[in-house]
Amino acid sequence: MKKIYTQNETLFLNGFLIGLICFFITFIITFLLQLNEMSLLKIAFLPFVFGFFYFFIFVIYTVIFLNKYNKKIFLKGEVKEKRFKQILIVFVVSFLSYYILDCIVFLFDSSLSQEFADGLLKITENPTAQEMEEINALSKMPFSVQNFILNIISAFFSILFAYIFVKKSDLDY
Image 1 (cartoon, rainbow, N blue to C red):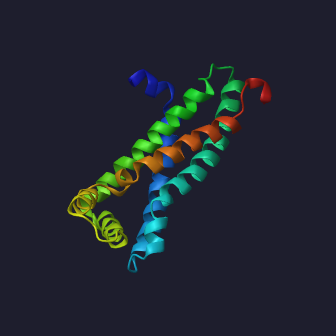
Image 2 (image 1 turned 135 degrees about the vertical axis):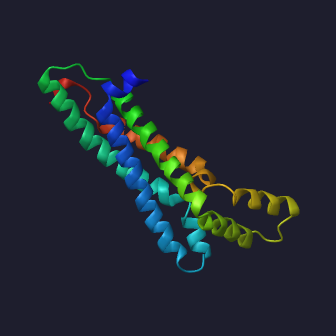
């Protein structure tokens, strides 16, 4: 693992930066939405916040960064990793850093998860005991974990678009 990190330290650092940027933007937006009472519109919009910002930040930052990084490596005459492996490293680090930061915040402030679950409970007409129990269990999870499936879908499309736009070979420089 140490060898992989030392060979790809720049990719790891930029992946962490993407995760950090996405976390803070998501945190700020959700905090602003949370200032007033959670409405139906806010509850419907909230799960898409991370996916929306992650997609745009990841694709734009990764394409610009990797194209410059690969050009620099090419000009030095060094061997570069395959672009899919580069994108995958940046993705894994950014996604994990986002989830870790969100879980740390959840340890200190679980109000967003609780308000989101309460909003879902308000939407549900005549909830059964099982539905109430499931929503209660949902409120005990970090917000990122609550929306894991949407986050994975966003990540898939982010990787796909980044792969399309990162230059394919050294001949493109």
